[in-house]
Image (cartoon, rainbow, N blue to C red; front, side):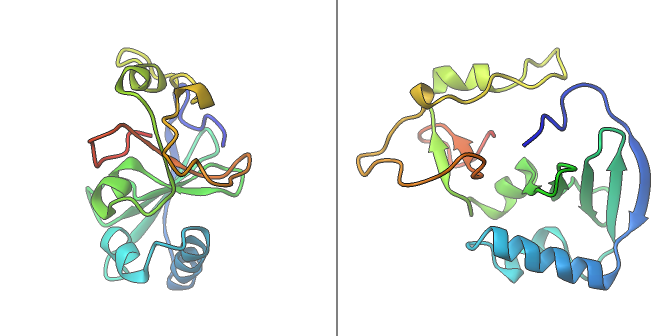
Amino acid sequence: MSNCFKGDFKVTTQSLMGKAELKKLHSMLIGEFPLLSKKMIEKVLSSKEDINILKCSNGTALYVSGEGNPPAFFDDGFGGVYPTLFTLWRLGNFMPTLVTHPQVSKFVLPKESQRSAGADMMLPGVIVPPGGLGEFAAKDIRTVMIPDNPHAFG
């Protein structure tokens, strides 16, 4: 994934998503995230509300349901669509997770005074569960959490 939110960006265009486009997005999300159900997607991208696509100057696109709601998913500009933290917090965890030590999380998160991304997550910072990490490949999508906190931070 690119550092799609690294540095300044602004919304360049905003358009309404058509029903066919929304159906295609729903199918793609369910294919990408098997634990994500249609009912869950409806909670954040309701077909009863207008879905806005906000295209940004850095090549990303944000999918927003209704007026005044946070973005539910984003397209990184390279064909990958990912849930935002708002979506992960609202729907619970529907993705494989990596758990890190609380002390490591402050380096992964960007500094409050900067718009730049934080440090990359490296394997020595991951807490390996008793059963191991299982199989995964480069570019597989994971959430990042700390122990005893049900909410992802990355």
